[in-house]
Structures are given as C-alpha cells and as structure tokens.
Amino acid sequence: MTTPEFSDNRDNFCYRHPDRQSFVLCQRCLRTICPECQTQAPVGVICPECMAAERKNRTPAQKRAARRWGGGGAVTAVRSGKPVVTYALLAVTSFIGLLQLIPGLGGEITSQLLFNAVFLYPNITVYAFEPWRLLTVLFVHGGFIHLALNMLALWMLGQSLEPMLGRARFLALYLISGLGGSVAVALIAPGVSTVGASGAIFGLMAALLIIGRHIGANVTGILVILGINFAFSFFVSGIAWQAHLGGAVIGALIAFVLTRTRRREQRVWQMVLLAAITILLMIFVLVVPPLLILS
Image (cartoon, rainbow, N blue to C red; front, side):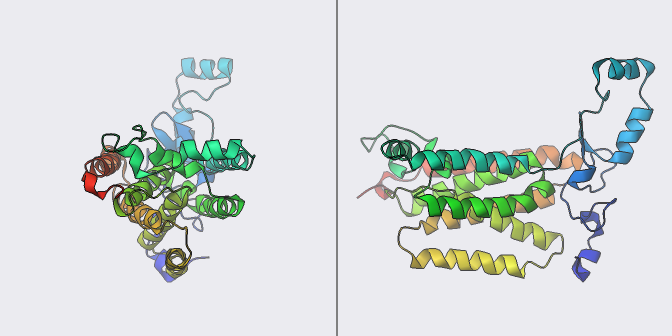
C-alpha cells in the first residue's frame, strides 16, 4: 500500500490509520486525520482524541444542554467522510446532461450555458455581457459519451482528492480550474464555443499530480494519464485543448498553494491566495485587447 517515499512523509498519513493518506489536519492538535477520524467542530475538523477531551471538559450547563437538545455541546455531528461535493457535482451535471438529450429543450439549455468569448466583450459584439458562462459551461456537454467520460473521471478523482483536501478546498479547486479552462479558451481561441467540464477535470488531475508528489507518492501513472489525455485532444477534432491546458495549469497552481498553506495559522493566506488567483483570472480575461476577438 505504501512506498519508501511514503515512509519519509509520515505526517501526511492519518495518525490513527497509518495506511490512509490525507490532506486534512485536526485544528486542535494539527495531526493529520483521515475522513473516518474527522469530526466537525466550530473551529473546523478535530480528531477523536481532541473530541473526547472537548466533551470531558464541558461544563454541567453544556452537558445539560446536550442532553436536552440531543447535540454534542461544542462539537457537532461527525462527518461521514463521503465525498459529498463530488456526488453533488455528479448529480447536478448529470441531471443537466440528461435534460440536454431531450429534443428541443436540449438545444436551448446548451445555448444558454455554453461558453464563448463573445459573451465577455459586449462593446464589440452584438452579444450581452454574460460572464457567468465561464462556469456554467462546466455543467453542459456535447453528448452522452462526452458527459459519461467526464463524470467517470470526476467520480474517480473526487474519491481520492476530496477526502484529502476537504470539501471546501475540493470545490474551490474544481470551480477555479474550470474557470482557468474557460479563460484559456477566451485568450487562445476567441470566438470558439465550448461545452464540458474537461477544464475542471484536467485541473483535478494536475492537482492530484502535485499533491501526490508532495506527499511522496509514485505519480508516474498520473503523469502518464495526464499526458495521454492532453495529447489526445490535439488529434481529435472538436476538443478544446485550450480548456485542458488552462485547467491543468490553474489546478497545478492551486495544488501548490494548498500544499504550502496546510497549517492552521496559514488558513487566511490560503484563502487570500485562492481569491487572488480567481480575481487575476477575471481581470486578465476581461482586459484582453478587442483585436483578439472574432475576426
């Protein structure tokens, strides 16, 4: 299950389950804990030992309140550890994808959610300013096969990444990577209409590569899969390789930020840096010279 590299990075494994790697720290003792050992508390997630200490130190009034309301005092319900964000993204995207298969309705949904750079520059096009398409494009696809492949990839990657990162970080990684893919399309291929979650998926793959390397995992397989998928997009017409490139670059950048801001006292910096990446992407794409738009 582990490699010699893993043995050199024991801090990246759950202290109660040494065979389970994780990216989440107990916010009290700062030890790494896997999803099974994570309990949601007001300060974030905490480990079972800290939870027991918290309950032991409760005042009589807190204990009476817990008995009365059926709660846990200062500690709330235990997290299930299930990748619920992954499941939610799968459910929403699949539902929209199925609606797209309905004759008549599907075309209207696609036209309302797809992305094209012309929707970012209303002053030089006849189109309205609709920047939300930078993200809504992630939820529409070009057919059942396109949808199925992306959802399979999301399910496989989410099973590994979401427990390691935590739900909020995973969602941020997915959405900002998807945004990066759309920005790359706008800059490299203005005027091209795109659909699909491929930018976000490539962001997840790139992030898994960076995080795996950081914790000492053997990332050769991930690197090969990422390379094959990226090269494949050049040989099949209709695939927006620009979205793949943008998503992968931003996903790798976000993963680098996350691996360098794990500690509790670095949480503010982590949020600031992720917000900065998002803002810079928006500024960069909105100030592109109009000459890059449709000829």
